[in-house]
Image (cartoon, rainbow, N blue to C red; front, side, top):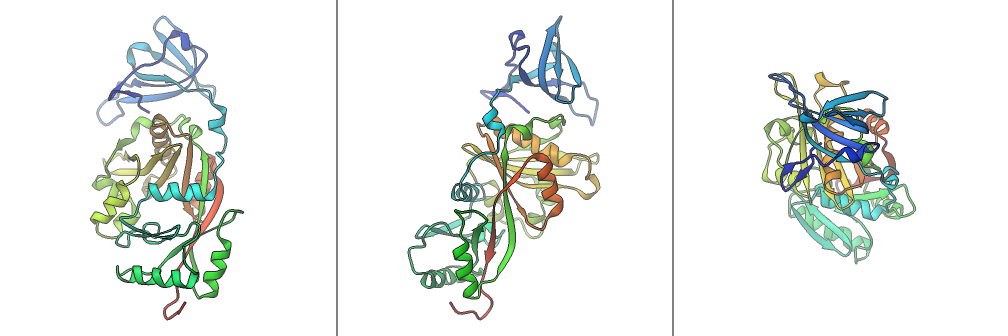
Length: 338
């Protein structure tokens, strides 16, 4: 991970930091096609005669010539940051909506109608938080009309699984012939442990915009034309970063996206090319993005994963994510009257 001050990498550790946990980046001296930098995270156990010794969590000791350092900082000891963050469902839903912002929105009481040319359900569905300000049937008629004018189906996101979620709304919509679909789990984690790994995050290239390689790998963008709406959703949010890990052939081997919003870092689009799987690249992408989000002041992480995606859920289990709540979508069956 980089440590930037006024746009420049800096070494912000000294001999006085021996005994503290640090994160450093050093020149690796790699040849053509090899990484130019290598990262190390661990306890600075000594700094003698121009050589730093850093002991990783695995017990491995890394020795680094101080002349090769290009960046370094102390990793603050903050136990609270390593615990699963406390959060209400509404807070997470609002943060997630800002992190995946719709191109067009309109308020209906406390609900938000969202449209983005059909790119993803999240950006083309009703964020149903609180009171719509109308009786439900009248609200549903307004929703049908609003989405109909945009050539989109009326879709409502409904949260479930906690005391502060919307099970009564789910029941009411079911009674009116709006069946459920696309069940999703919202998972959360402390952010610091995601960055505290021994993987070489220098392999990940971070940028503010997704390039053609990134877009070509992301399955939701690759499924259709990359329209202005697609780019606006992907790059929208308070502070968005895209990660790409180049493969041996120069093509993207893995990608990911993070958006930082206050204490929250939202992860999405973590994908690995089929031929590059089982090499720890998803962990690498997550660590690189988590490191950047930590630098921007975030301390908690969230993501959304389809409930039936067992492979992704197993990965996020290993990374330390836990379930917070669930949500699904509801749309009326053809010919259903509210």
